[in-house]
Amino acid sequence: MITNKKLIECVPNFSEGRDKGKIEKIMDSFRGKNGVKLLDYSADESHNRLVVTIVGEMEPVKNAVIEAMGTAASIIDMTKHTGEHPRMGATDVIPFIPVRNVSMTEVIEFSKEVAKEAAERYNIPIFLYEKSATSPERENLATVRKGQFEGMAEKLQQPEWKPDFGSDKVHPTAGVTAIGARMPLVAFNVNLSTNNKEIAAQIAKNIRHLNGGLRFCKAIAIDLSDKGIAQVSMNMTDYTKTALYRAYELIKIEARRFGIHPIGSEIVGTIPMEALIDTAVYYLGVENFTMNQILETRLME
Image (cartoon, rainbow, N blue to C red; front, side):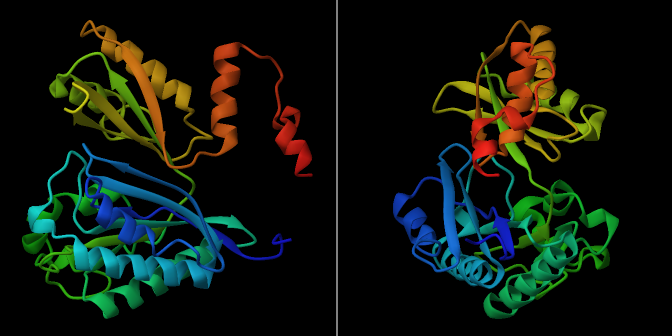
């Protein structure tokens, strides 16, 4: 049994979703490591991004993540990187999430330890974000990443954007990384019946919290040129307060004005069962349903 151990989840994002050889080299950092379980990984060519989900004990997770950062820094050249997803580094962002027997305060301190060690080892500037942020301006990843890799050299010279760890000069090929502690996040994307990215951008603008939309929803437009469609790509930062079905239904409403509609959706990485149950209950119209009615929940008691 592992119930007495401190467990954390980590979902590092790397700026490589096309070269299978490079992806496998990064993934080797997470395979076969004691104290670390690889739950999922997803590489997307349009986004040109690799999203990995692991869970494990704190020290083994730290070692695996720092090893992966070094691998990414050695094989990814950000000066040649292109993709639909915003990015600023070879290892773009590393969030840590408390899972069992560990407090958010502990995870915040842990994220700082990882950031300090990685910055010193690889000479990569690192920002702390979300719950680990050292100022309110650094809480939102989109604000930290604004300017992307191409604009980071100038950004880091501004006093208010001095990195929390590492040099104030961008790593020439590995760029900049954000590390922090946060609550569970659901990466939820909705595909549209159009290839017009401008329409997707307008829908994303209307549904995200930054522009007066759903409180715990971040959204951008993505051009899935390989599929001939556009996509609204979302991070649902608190699924317990803004359910997935609300985002999906609002996209349907906003899409209607352009004469289009959703044609599918996807979850990137893992998702808490409660987030899916909440949505299933809504669409099925189930009354007075509780998580105790889930067979797997009862088996784990």
